[in-house]
Length: 226
Figure 1 (cartoon, rainbow, N blue to C red):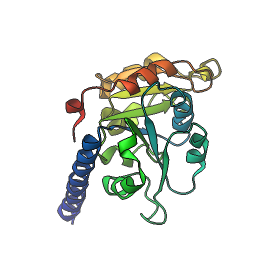
Figure 2: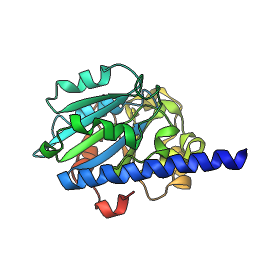
Figure 3: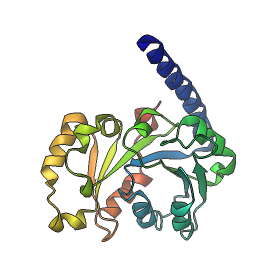
Figure 4: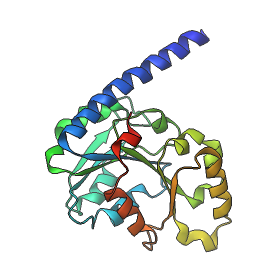
């Protein structure tokens, strides 16, 4: 029974990676760089995007917004006048707590890829499942709010291990919380010492410019291929 279950999981991931490579081919053909933005619910992904995407210079940016239901985050980004495509996992995909390659592929006809240089896929808020499914992205970004505590890299290592960039968000709350930034960074070093880290506050704008610069100057694609 155990071996059968493992085989099923491996087959599912293999199938996902095959579709992710197809997505990646489409993105490459269109010349679009793709970021998979992940976090726990409420960490501040959308708030950071509101700050960042309002001024990305000549870069033509778009967003694929993943949620279980509704379009609240997509509606918040609409005023930025960037293309935003909503992708709900319920009911079409059973209310999944993540986006996978097939879901993203189903949304591609609605995304104006020829008009974009950068596509940010805002994944469903979850600290487990999104890390397991590549969607064809160039790079992954993890947003971790200080309200979640310093232990998250140790409790959810795969999520942090698979990301090129980790944003430590809501640092404007540091005076009001018992959060040790150095301890968090030490825990992050234990699972992903090579990740870049930026301290951010979507409320005050601290670190936003650094995040914006990183977004518009992504690492070479060969370093992040599926």
